[in-house]
Amino acid sequence: MRSTWLVGTFFTAVILISSTAFAHHGANLFDTTKAVVLKGTVTKFEWGTPHNQIFFDVKDDKSGEVKHWVASTEPAPVMLERGWTRRSLKEGDQVTVYIFAAKNGATIGNLQKIVLADGKELTAAGPPGGAAAEQPAAR
Image (tube, rainbow, N blue to C red; front, top):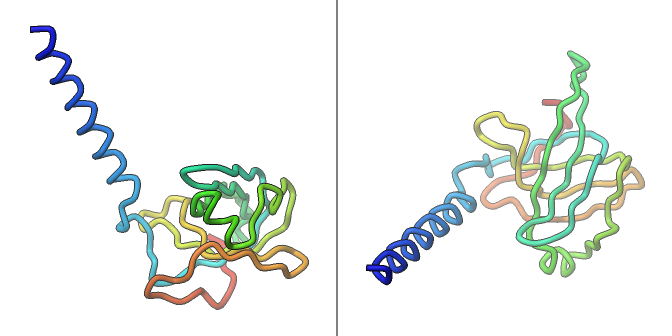
């Protein structure tokens, strides 16, 4: 009886974990046909695995409202190969962010590239089947 319960618990855990991982990497969440360009200020940069996270604030030109955005990148080892380090971004950096934003309007997305105030460009991902946005726009 006890071994049946353990086996059932194990398989339930495997199913729950695998479905969460599948949903986490769903390609349908973001509009990858065109990157949105946002100008903002870095509030936090988390270096790690499974993804680096860039937290930044964007002020809407029309309303003046500040929106808090989060951009994900590839894992740290991949980003190292692209020239990033854990010190690539710091709180207060003024940046232009090219992001494949969430389709549902949430202020999250996958980073395509980021341009620092000095013009240095850090690439995260190429546009899969799409092109970068051409004009900065507040969202």
